[in-house]
Every structure is written in C-alpha cells, then in structure tokens.
Length: 264
Image (cartoon, rainbow, N blue to C red; front, side, top):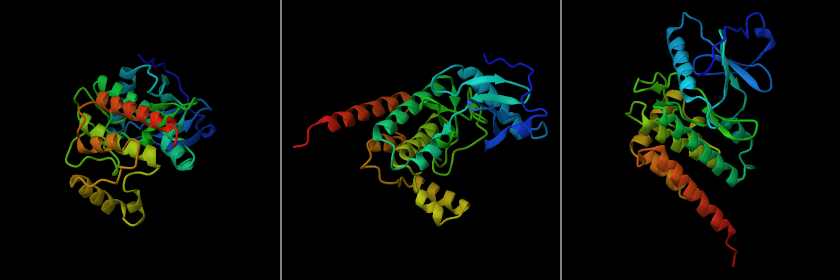
C-alpha cells in the first residue's frame, strides 16, 4: 500500500520546479533528478479528478514491481513518481543508433510489464511508447494509469490513433493490439503509418488509420525480427500477454542464434 502523508511539495514552491510534461489529466513537474510529481487536478474538474483517483488506485494495487514506475509517495499535491526518460523520445533521438538487442530487451520488458498489469485485473487503455519510461538503469517501466479500467470498470481514456483497435472498448485484446503498435515503434523507430501524419490533419488521420486497421491493412512487418508477433497482436490472435511474452522470447533467441552462425 502506498502511503499518503499530508505533505505538500508544491505549495508556495511551484516556481522552483520545472514543468516537463502534461499527462492525460494533469501536469508533471520535475522535483529533482530522481523524482517528479504528477499534480492533483483541480477539484472542479470532475473528469480529471476521477481519472486521477483511478491512477492512485492502480498504483496502490500494482505496488512494487520492476516494470512499474516506483511511487515515492502520494501527497496532498499529487503523486511523486520516480523520474525516467520517455521511451518514445529516446527512440526518436537514437533511431539509427540503438542496437537490435537493446530493442528486443525493451520489448521483452514491456511485455512483462503489461502481463503483470493484466494479472492485477487492470486494463491500461493507453498502451504505447509514450507511456513507457526508461529508468536510470535503462530498463522499461509503465506509467500513466489515469483513466485505466480496474476490475471490469470502463476505462475513461483511449489509445492513440496508431494503436486503436476499431470498434472495441478497452479490454485485454485492445491492450494487446496497442502493444503490437508499441513493438512496431520500438523496432522501427516510427509509429504505424507515421508517414500519414505529414499529409493528414488529426481528424482525417484517425479516420484513415482506423479504416486501414478495420480492413486488416497494416504496415509491412515481414522484415522485422518481431514482425510475426506484431502481426498476431494486430490480428487478435493472442488471448493473453503470456503468449506475447513467450513469442518475443522465442524470436529473440532465434535472432541471437542466427547472428552467431558463421557466414560462409
């Protein structure tokens, strides 16, 4: 259980902290090099308060786990969380430099995290590289459970345009679908159909990609190490993250073995 001391981090000191991101429902400030605080929403914003309370419940249920961002404490100002680097930002800055072995490790660790989340009867409902952190040791951790679905309750958030399974409310299958897009971004450095962002506005982009996904038309993955896993996520072939994690491990082992075979 996460402790909730009546301690203020921001009162009278907010100007000392740096705004580093805006989450689903509230801003995030850097406290120091190791911690950030996700601000409690204003009480007048019912939607944001509901999503924030869901996030607190989710973190309390998830507890201490190597693939979940560590909660330092919950204060009257918000949730104090360990600081890390957004995986998407890392990927974009290092697109051509990250070794495939590192990408495969990220994929396996992300699968472990989502598997654990599902074992706690939580649907994340916004799975993606934007909600994965690299901790100070370079390992993957999930963040942002604002609006997630707990114990069958309907999630109050939804996936990004590149991760949304058309015609489905958030559940394990939609989380896995979004995880396929996450794997695609990890290995290629780009979101599925990212090239359409340059030519279509937000509304048209969402409708276009939703139509392509509904027709079963996905970006090519046959040249990717995790291509088969990604396609099975998108096609709805997996019923649990156990199977996804297993296949990522199998593909990784095959890739390593093939790299070790001497060239004739």
